[in-house]
Length: 565
Image (cartoon, rainbow, N blue to C red):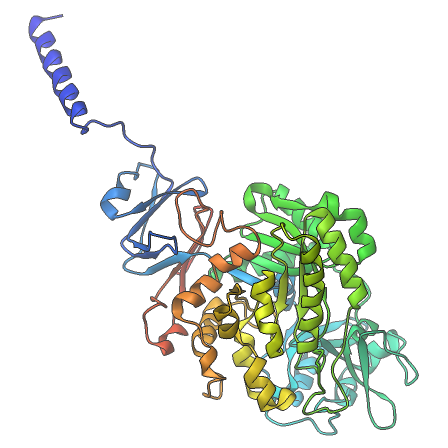
């Protein structure tokens, strides 16, 4: 080797050693797969606050900080997303919805937003014209309180089946109430279900009748099973529901969906799809099935963080009552607009107590749909008995909805550690007619009182109950911070959330409610890179602009699963 070349190499070596001594010749870090820059990234992490850049490698966050700090992780294969000043937040977590129901709604008549019974009859007539004789026609979303006028010949404000039956003589028709807690059937569906004037409703249900005793076609709560289609959806139909629900949720910024009750067969299919790598957003699923079947399957169906955290099954769901809109919520005192009724207890207390024992035995959470004040009291009594026998266990059992509470029950949530799994948009959607059902005093003291619950120390989460409401988090966030109804009025404004509280109720709080706060709900190094990017800063913009905000990107595990063109 020439002496001059040796001299040059020696000088280079000395130079690098001097740089290394100064810390300027550090090994290059492994490049990230995804880098976000140029925006406002709200981490919700304690002590971290807001940063301008984030990096993910694989499905985890590996860096948070300034653009200069994070750009060191940009390599040849790194996808760099310029946020262009937009807001990035922890991915929205749907805290209570019906995942396959969202997909199924896309395969049926959509009746939400329809202004009259006459319009619904017209929609069914159009569907009949395209259907084969005997083909079932199903729909969901009607709500008698939201029609511009009551139907002719209404019973308790509900339509009778006659106009519907006239346009569908050869096709069974079943239309579910927006709440999912009542169904309206035509004569053909009642004929196939064997429903006559002498039919008795099952326990926890009601067949609504006219003065002459004839069924009008409306079946409340468990009675809806009498007219339901008996053949379950095929695997192909279920997979289509998953695909449709996934598409809609990702487009609306949802990275995890907490499913509020699926039967074991549906969960088996979701497990198969998880094994196939076919799930594109994360599912946290409650089992909704009989205690007899649960005893046989709880041990083997339990999943925690399955398939790279795309599927968790560790909760049992029951409904102790129905919905307020269908007069099915179980109340301590009669309805103001139906003095002869206190609603319906749809699942016996004894059945739920047995489920509680199974949940404790197998390490499951118990989640109980409780809307009326009597339902909430009974549910908290069940929780209290279980907690007393297990004082050292972190159970995080959940009251799903917790809509209408007696004042005595409000502090019990915090004292028991029970989660109030609520839906802010129900407040603004139902608000105009809630005082009709409960009266002003009960409405003011206990209807959708999330501020009182939070101030008492309870954990409150948010969700949409989709497809009861649109799965879109932004109208729901708006409802939480304004309580402004469609008529422009505000439903008891002292119960509003702050913007940050509303964001936490849709992210960290929901993660906590499913024992997943170490994985998601905030943006921290080591956590899953589940992120929602919004077109506007919902934490600072004027209230009216929240509803104009759009989802720009939905990122699940560091992969951009949705981008708005």
